[in-house]
Length: 287
Image 1 (cartoon, helix red, strand yellow):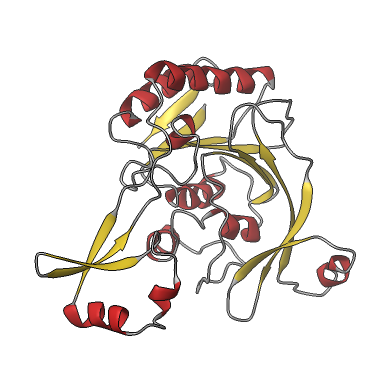
Image 2: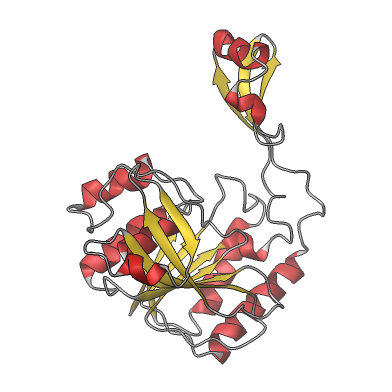
């Protein structure tokens, strides 16, 4: 019986992977992550926790997941932990997967993770005692060819079935700030926030109140018809079946609160996907 977890936002998958290694569902090292998503979620960040060892408790793991991670930087810490040594990013439907690229993920003195291409000099780094580097392979593409994994965690974001432009699905978000904070940004031409593209972050004033506004890019096309979404689900299920892909663990991310999966369709996509996955896997839905 394969455990299948439904999560709201994608950083929660990090908690599940660590929990799964503790419970024995997933080997603690050397797995493949099959990441099915409209976005790579492969950003790196600065982390205060000791990533050289697995977490000592579920509470510590939960604090790291919800207090440190964002929805775009949860994969790299799991790679550095060693849970995954292969990442396969399924981002579309028709292209073939790229050849495996050897990469290094490193942790510097500031606790910043960085991903680098593997070079001949990398072998010298890896031979150092207590090296703060991990070697892994990375591939990306679509459902256009065959794929043979090792022990695998299947990670699916519902927004994969919705969009054809990876930055088009998020509406404006507002965070209220003080008037002084607003003036700090607007009156300083060199404020760090002003150096970002305005489409990312800008101060706004509305009805005497002050906000920071994050703006998604304009949608280049409307939400696909339900028939097209179902067709994409069918293509994905057929690809899993054709490649006889088995999984130790399945995570299904709704992404509805972040807005990447539209409110109008997330439930229908989830129900259809769960029904089709049941044709391939004997899974137990976890809560």
